[in-house]
Amino acid sequence: MNVKLIILFRLAISAAAILLFGQAGAEAQSSASSPMGRYSSPSTYCGPGSPRQNVDTIPWIGCFSLTAGHRAAGSLSGQRVEVAVDQDGREVFTVNGTVLTHTFGANRTPSRTNLPNVRLSGAGYSFCDDEAGNYCGVNIGIFSRNPDKSVLFMVAECLPPHGRLCALDQENWDYEKSRQEMYMPTPNNH
Image (cartoon, rainbow, N blue to C red):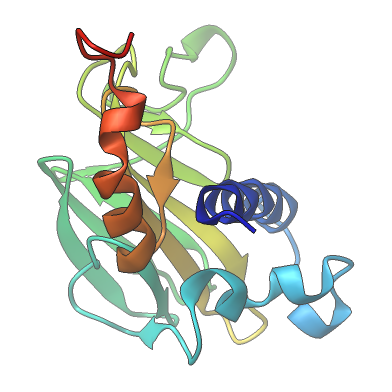
């Protein structure tokens, strides 16, 4: 199977998993009881072995897990981001010192959050260059909330110019970067 198709397939399954497992207030579910079978397994997206747990720094790409009471921080699209898991196993995102919240009803913003360049995206957030979300270079999503009150996060880097093709690991990032000229119009191939 073509590597590009595999990447797109993984992203589609990832989005479905995020939507299925990432709803606010959702019950934690083990992968053994998931109707998605092996596609609910972190190794399908994060690679073999366990995702890094209780890291201090958010990785630029890939998966990491935080248990209750732990936090990780880093820079995503030029913004200072901290992700924490509280004692109840709920994730808390802080961006440039402001706790990230969703906006609803009459208060709903285009980004669906209280921060203009951070867009609600499935069960996570996209970090964008502008309010319109024309290019969102990084996505951080919640893959699962677990019975032990840990949360598994996935960080995807997205290729310019539109940020619609994202990679979850270094190998796929390198592959897609090497093929980027196919996605970018030039005077000779438009």
